[in-house]
Length: 368
Image 1: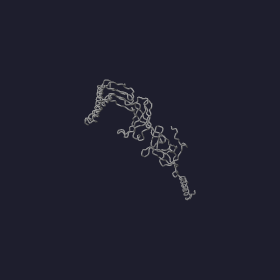
Image 2: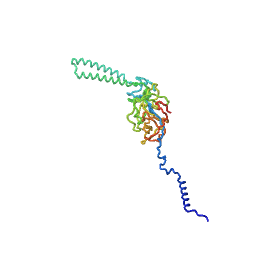
Image 3: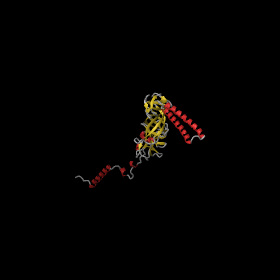
Image 4: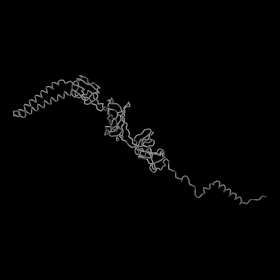
C-alpha cells in the first residue's frame, strides 16, 4: 500500500506555483524601484527653429500710375465782337498762326466815313475851345459857355474813340500762337455780336488730366516729376502742377493736372494716356509677398526677431508689390526677417534662429 504525501508539501507547492505566476505577470522589477526614471513629459522641449535673413532698408521712389487724357494747354472759342458780314478769312482752317495774325475781317460798311466826320467834328470843337480861352482871358465869354465848349471837345473825342474801337472790332487777331483748329463761317455770312465762329488751340504745351484715389492724393505735392505714356508707347516728360482741394462727391477721388512740353506740336489733345508720377523717396524693405501676414485688426504685418531671439510682429505699410516682391515701410532699419517657419510661432515666442546667410543683404542686391 503506497505512502501518502503530507498535506504541508502540497500546500507549499501551490504557494510556489502562485508566486511564479505573479512574477511572470509583473516581472518588471524596475516598476518597484523607489526613484522612477524620467519620462518624456518632464523634459523641456527645445525652442522651435526658424530660418532668418538679415535685411537692410534701402531708398525707393514709388510710382503712382493712373489713367487720364490729354488736353490742349490753352483753347479759345473765337467770337465776333460786333455784328457784321464776313469780308475775309485770311487764315485757313488747321493753319498755324502767330500772335497778332489776322484771323477774320468783317465789312466796315460806313465806318470810314463816320470816322472822317468824327475827326472833323473833334477838330472843330478844339478850335472853338481855343478861341473861347482867348475870350475868357478878356472876360468876353461866360464861364458856362466856356464849359460847354470843353464838353463839346470831350464828346467829340469820345465819339471818335468809339468809332475807332468799332473799326478794330471788325478785325479778329490771334491773342496767342497756335493752330486755328476750327472755322464755322464763310465769307459773306452774317455774324451777330458774341456769336462763335471758330476755335484757336495752343498746342505748344499739353495738360494731362486724371483722378487719383483719396488714399494716394495725400502723398502728392505740386512739382513732382511725371511721365505720360501714350498709346503708341512714346512718352512725354512734365511735372505735377495742380491737385484738387476737394474730392469728387461721387468717386471720392481728387483731380490732378500735369503740365507737358510739346515742342514737336504733336496732335495729341483729347488722346488717352497713362500718367506715372514719381513720389518722394522712402526707406523700404524688399521681401517676398508670402511673408506678409495679418494681425488681429486685419492690418498687414511682418514677423522678425529682436536681440533676444524672440518673435516680433510689426505693422507695415505696403508701398508697392508685384508677383515676386513687395516693398514695405514700418520695420527697423536693420531687421532679422523670419523667412521660413514664421507660421508656427507667435509674437513673444523664443526661437532658435537659423541664418540663411551670415552677411546682411545690401541695399543694392539683386532680387528675383
